[in-house]
Length: 93
Image (cartoon, rainbow, N blue to C red; front, side):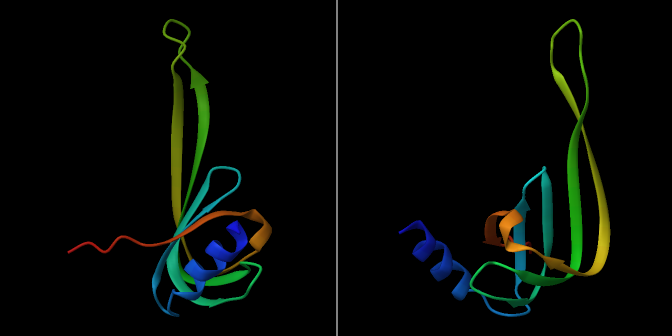
């Protein structure tokens, strides 16, 4: 049943629509949907990729300190097995 819901959500997306994709290993992508298929293999264009990593733990408070690194990629193929979440990008303005 979950596969059907995921497929329906992705099928509702339009090509050239802004998309947010959360991947395994703390990777997040925002880009334009160029192509996709039933296994969530996708091609995105005009991507901003963000990777969040823990860099240290505060010894007094045990608070974890994270660092986020962002960069732009013109076009990227995404393997569907690494996809955790697909959602339309928020529209600002």
